[in-house]
Length: 519
Image 1 (cartoon, rainbow, N blue to C red):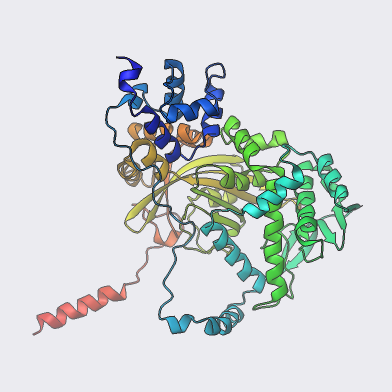
Image 2 (image 1 turned 90 degrees about the vertical axis):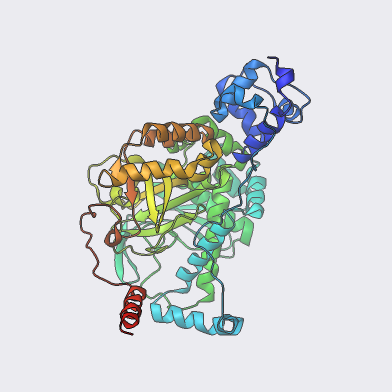
């Protein structure tokens, strides 16, 4: 068999496979270089292969096979039918709902009803604004090109930037740095007291005040400098920016005991600007193209960020943006179960609420298990089956227990929805997920993943190039549930209680049946 006679559809199949896995030509070339720099094709040569102008050598074909976890002969399949390259996009976060009847959702009525709703529930304008921002992030999949371009212009796409580089950039833009000494204190955050530490704050028109403790913590120092520089660049340094302090519910800064309930224009403005500055800081510290190359080299290992003096949170948040795979989530949880930061680009269900205290968390979610488990590993990777009604969803997450600058422990977790990757790799995600679900159900909620499913997941993980998905295969998969009181396991979780509640629709049907029999 010659390559020429069997290569009619090779270029089209390669292109379809590359696009289905959301890799650019440069991404594919980089991945090949990682495997064998001497025979890896250039971007221009890859383009010619895909357009049918060149036929790859056996060595290059072997590289393609290793990247996409296929047999080399797959590329010479005579079947010209190429599966649709990109499935219909799924929006992140919660599902949208129709606003019917229309008169109840008119602009005038909403303007009157929303402040009343917030007032009755004790929700501040700042909380409400953060919920809106989270939804906006999730629906747009973290795509804010104007902020990206602005950050890349300021930083000239250099990676990594040192703390000294950030200080020089601040001074270049007319910012003065002043240092202060301040230890952690008890701060009031609404109706509770929290251990907090003021890290830094911006004083208009151009002074950044920095806690001297940041000098011993370059990753946090870099983020604070980048965030305050963003305020100067984006908003002219007008002063409408929150203090960087640890321990609070929103953006890490305590809101204060005298927060205003209901809508407050300044709170809303602060929330949006805090988000813009945080996103800009991530884009400045981790430029999209350079950081994607870095993650590819390191196979998305979070600890690799330490070499670049980046906090684990910055690495996790930024990988959800720069990865060609869009189905990510990110959590930041404080004990006893408060989700302070949430991003759900993969639509992972959160029935217990976004940015809220979780009253009955399932103890098998990695983020909550690590919050409660003393003496456990500081980091963990887990494959989880989430029962959502009659459907089983499959996720993998990597979680790390860390301390904030005031010493408060919290858990940050980044994860992916595995179903699209499995479907792209094997074309049969439903049956693979079903076998994992059945294995867990037959073993009290957690089980070693069956060999065939392991092989499929391992292949998908290597295509994604995410090492911690493969790490998770060494641990049992777990069933996780929306609430511990609604546990789908054969034996319910500890502290969960079987509900005696009846569905009213079932009661209605029983009444109808009895009345029907009485005729």
